[in-house]
Image (cartoon, rainbow, N blue to C red; front, side, top):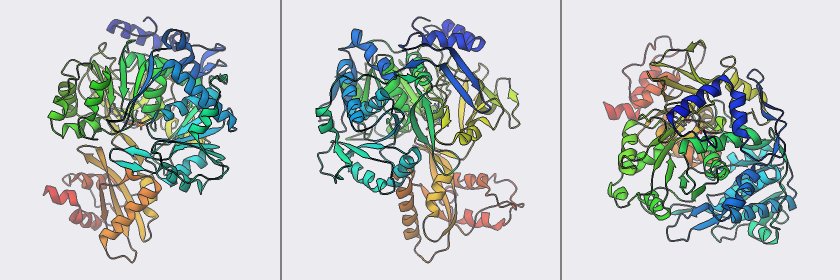
Length: 638
Ligand code: PRX
């Protein structure tokens, strides 16, 4: 394993063995490859009970020196970032490592001159423009904790996150492009900040040339600030366990939680997983289509590739604009070698015209990746033959916001792929399957709850401001284990196939929503007495959102009620959480103790009423028949 890159299956096996037998030696050797101001006293100290997990104890570093400065000597003129616009006719932007370094240093100085210091929280609500990557890195440069908020979230969702983090600054833009649409991001931030008191400064990047409202004394144009900024910036020296960022994600309860990642461990894991899974070679152009608003964009657009000295492509647009060939046009235009996307995008493109793919050569591609949800076999084969021409290994990468980086995945060209299987754990990762009682299932060809039994450097450390919640959500279900919330199967060769969430989390197009979060939004609509939200299989999105709502208000027009409910969801979360179906129901199936029987609601949402199970123990069994009578999916099927 030279330069901690595994190059053969034998090396994979040896690395895995070593990582299990002596995790500290394994990770300690990998960490030697980074630039530290001070090395660690101990590689790992941990217990999963509190939980308390410390990697590279008392080491000191700055992650941006590892992403940028250390590459300047050998890769100063290499492209670090290629930015491709939403509009294919707009000129792309290319920044070398040296240029990106300068931009990050300038922006870091802008943050400092606006009163931001180590430990302060900065919320970033930006479209996929270079300023987004630069802002993230600028925060890291000065030790400010960034919290990126996906630019599709609503004003209320921003306000919740800003307030929870008590952010001092928000960085946004005048507006954003998404396909043919333009969206006034600054206006959304202004609305959010009516509910926030912690924010002192708003920096506004210019993207559309609009003239948004600028609040005197609070709002500043980023461009003007950058013009004044010096290009040298001494990095803040961080302890390995200082927080690097917060990223809010949905769970089974109503309020999204702020997953916290720290500087040292996250750095080591982002780089290690990037190099090994994608088998990046020095001249490769790498493109991950995710948004930096999600963990995939953090680890595999910004940090991982830059740590590895790679050329990373950032795309502002969507796969369907101006037409369904856009991804492939970008691949050919920039000679992309490694392409990493989500099953939902693959399925959407698969449903379109074959010529949209066949019109492009795609000759540069050598590795394909998938992330965010299980990839069904049909989509896997289409991706493999139409895009990869059966020449490119597909890495189906399983991981989570909480894991910081890829956990179970083939290593491109090194370990075997298997359609719809994430396959084997990366060396350093120790997955186990448990039964409902928490007993480890040691045999293969079995299915169980997916847990991880030993820490890895990228594991979350806490949930912001509420450590108890971190403990209860991930470390309390099974003693001594990190519980993923996913169910998985293991085949005869030890390959893992992820089945999906076993908790109240719905995965729509690779984005996580808690059912309670959506129910809370629905319940704010006047006249709604109660609601229950479940996921159901959706051809393109993986899962769709199905809401059952009891309405007892004065409105008699069902369409107006549904529209009103959608409006509440859009206001509280964002358009991305719009339900596919809203069914107004007279009641909900409940047990005698008042618990909603979601299993029954899921079955009805699927349109499968053949196996509802025993409903006689319900408080009001007739309600099930009444729901079925009106259920649109069941009707379609019968
Ligand atoms: O259910 C799993 C699914 O996405 C969840 C994590 O969501 P999030 O934190 O938003 O991160 C998404 C990007 C890493 C997991 O609990 N998931 C993610 N990748 C896969 C997957 N399910 C199956 N196969 C995958 N490759």
